Image (tube, rainbow, N blue to C red; front, top):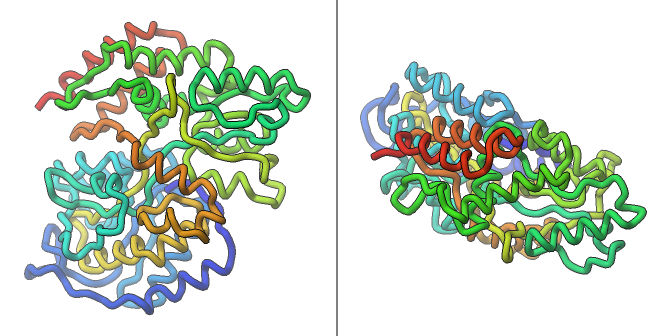
Length: 433
């Protein structure tokens, strides 16, 4: 889960009343509640998730626990880095341990976990998906079956310093990469723009560089994998996308520290006032707009769709889904807890507290929500047109190959064409049927 700051006591009051509105539901058939059984079994469960810096997740769990004293949830926090989270979940699954019950999965992990039979299939008639964004529903399915319920969505958006653009006479955010560079040049000529870096997207050697590459290549009309599921990287479109990342760093458009900054490092850099444009997730909005002195850009920034080479770019579809470990003992309680966290009251409260993107379409159009979070219409559009990272069973190996090749290109160790042809070769056997 992304790191987010809590919004205050009003939301806590709403959350603590949620269990009273929920009715317990029975099992999904079957005769036992042990390992590998159907969705039976009631009792305490664990919720396994990435590190939550907001403190709000515990409040939501406390809300559940107050209404379910015999089915209490205990949070197990994993490291902040997605690669480490995935590895620990896999280690637990391969030992068939029942220590993990509900898993907070990155949307791109569903295929891998389902194919390896680490997840319990979920009954579609027991989960309300009708009101969720279509793009999010697809992320929880594998081969026509539902394995995970969309909990939060995500898509990259462009944060920009509106005050600096206004001061430089730039009346609108850029729609193209060329417009973005031109706006940077104008801002740097103003007194307020001196010492401000132009642009940042994550190019450190983690999952984040895979995301940056997918977005840049898709924005250029290319794709890491073609419609047949095979690598499609030796194309002019893929080269154009990767060249954007390489040239942005080589030409000094990005901070010198770009290859070492992670998501949180980028957030802090933007909030320090040192950055004009930033590709970032929605979770940053609430934190960057804090009026408590923690952000130097509060009230001075806005958001827009990501730019591309010839017009608006393509965002990566991110987010998290909730799934049940195949080896969990109390699957009936696990399913009810998932329904609780993904229901409208919880999603509304979570949005208010954290600014994380919901999966329910109605919240993006709610006037009260839009008034508080002006980025919601931009984000809804971005999610609708977003592209996922490669949906493959061997995702860990695929993303590791992408990370290595793209990082070598961005840092100048390997020419773009060579990096792409080498990656094409690496992904071939990893995506073979």
